[in-house]
Length: 295
Ligand SMILES: Nc1ncnc2c1ncn2[C@@H]1O[C@H](COP(=O)(O)OP(=O)(O)OP(=O)(O)O)[C@@H](O)[C@H]1O
Image (cartoon, rainbow, N blue to C red; front, side, top):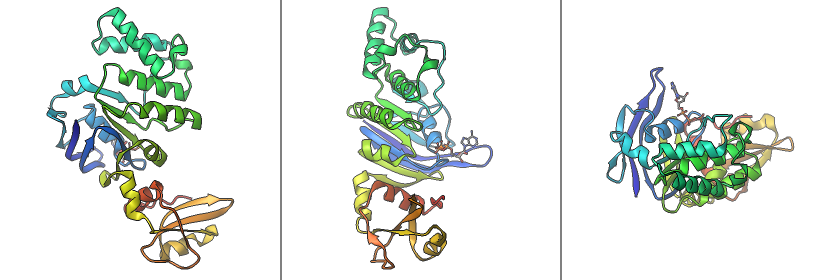
């Protein structure tokens, strides 16, 4: 199975070009779509999920013409949107039962089995009688995955699922997502580099509606290997360094600024070689488009 997105463009009525000729090939497994706020990730996710129309371009899931056969796509789609609304007074069990019914599971006992197995899968069985409004952020996201999985989808889209989760809930969520990837296409849209480095075998970086890179995370890292250098400087010297070097990221550590730069040759000036990571890949691409350094 393969999802092929070709030359997708979308301009909103206010003139913002959210998707600018996007083309992506997405194979089975976990695909990370990485980009800063406003990159166009949600617009792309909503377009693939057939919730909004593109101005031009095509999306095919094998033979299925996604943009024209919306019903066909919806039958095989599991979607966890960024703003996932819940009915606060309804219990997890009742809500999932409704969703399963909407997805066409008519037989009552079959539905009960499905709901129970979904609740177990996301570790919410013991909370099944609780009202959704009482769920923590992590529980909500796990419930979101349960509803996305009802109906055995072959394409799963999760839009910024780990934002706001504490480290242990994030880990739990990672474990859950990593079990999904093998027989389905899972698209994980996120601005958190760690989400992609932990989970994804394929990825793309988008910024201002354009694809800047696509491939394996390890290939992105290989490309930059030996070109990342690091140095601690005083905060007030940043602009001087920015004028002299290709600064791709900064991090405050104990009041000093740790700079990472990209350089094909030994930069001197006290910089030391650093081990390249996926964050370097991300920042080196997006710094071509926007200034990623915010202090
Ligand atoms: N309905 C809309 N009308 C006008 N502009 C919009 C609309 N939705 C999104 N945009 C703009 O389109 C661009 C892409 O937004 P989008 O939400 O797709 O990005 P994103 O990568 O998901 O960002 P975030 O991580 O902040 O959610 C942004 O500049 C945004 O302000």
